[in-house]
Image (cartoon, rainbow, N blue to C red; front, side, top):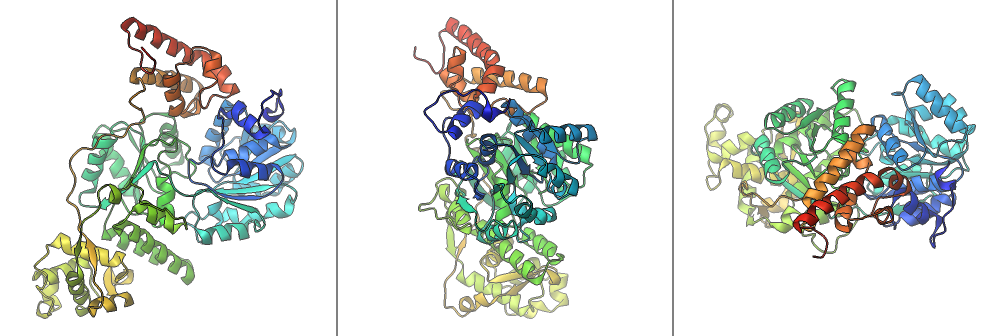
Length: 622
């Protein structure tokens, strides 16, 4: 039976809100969801920009259920389609997928169901959609809408370009009467314009829900001993939590996963160089088991719908602000507190610029990439609220400092670095702008190294002129000068530092410069962030989690597809005694009520019986 066309129950609400309640178990929409859904249900096109965890999928799932025919979702994420389909089937929605990972019999069965009008949603990879046979099948089927997920993949200026997306403008020509909705969590103004142009969505309504994720705490620090810094972060704040650790190289990914495993963490590597079956198995474990840490390159993460990722850590600086925002957005999709933690150094900038120099893109593309790299470095070096700077990059204004980033919670000390900056710039200039930071530090400190003697730099006026600072402090000065745009890294000159035009007023003494005072490594433990409020009984919560684990294991699906942690916390607070009370729990729709009410009610009843014997029932009046 088609979910949206089943028995009609009277509610004083719109059809969309009725379905939201009956199928998905939620009683209200968030942000612009209602307007987006109404637009698409009425046959209009939409371009949706909504942060990760903001509920983008509902914006096409509900219209697909409300309109005649099947909703077709174009997604680049073959490895995740099966999980997306499983999650919908848990809700009683008739869903399927078509991709190269399926055997011919599975594909044939899904195609028959699509042609016969027996599907509500079907997920298709973009390369399959453009095949003549697939287009014939779609023309022979009744299509409710086309949803283009991860739409930023169409942009050659974006951070996650997929060539197959360029052909998706055919939807406008082949199916002119079918509404299209393009969705992404990450796109600046330029990328949004390119999405609209390439997908023929210039006349579509644009919905920008905002980029702020207030539950994520942003923290950025300097590298000194990356592995020990990561271990300290995990031990003090996330000893048993699920999370993602991003590294720039495949080798570092595997070495970091091995190091975490040796320390007792459940860590798995993920990068494009691993065999496909190993990648698939590691991804499945991350999704379906609790407390797994995925150590990955950027090959991992797009479309990951795991709600309880409590941290995302970067051991290397991402290439762009867009990449940083999208990767950190995989934390805290359930709305509970989460950490975005990153450490970086000048070597990251040099490595990224070297990678950029090897790009085969046009000169304009390379210039745009350099601008984006400068932007992420600027975010790292900023001494004011990081969230305000992050949102400003996407054209969104935050009126007040956020109070939930490192620079708000522990404002960095600054010092008058004007004279030090002048010395640093002079050292770079007098050595011919041909040397990297380590050699320039040796010159300033008066170290007579072989290289200093080889180039006669011991005779320069700047030789030994920087004794007021130590080596690490001078490296900080150079790093900040690069971040502020006074110096640039010449990758063709093996990381040589070159002066930029912006440094002239500083060298002439026409401006003063405040520099960040690098903090000493913090060793004191912070209170561990937890997803369990103090008024929730941890014994009952863990019993409900165990019930969820058993049900998920029996079906071969991730635990969060049964219920999110938020639903379990609601059960702990409401302590439902019967099916009617259980139906009021957030996330409990008609299908899940039928499937799971008895199991979870039994756990709650058993807990209450045991608690009453001792007179302890958390969340109820005594």
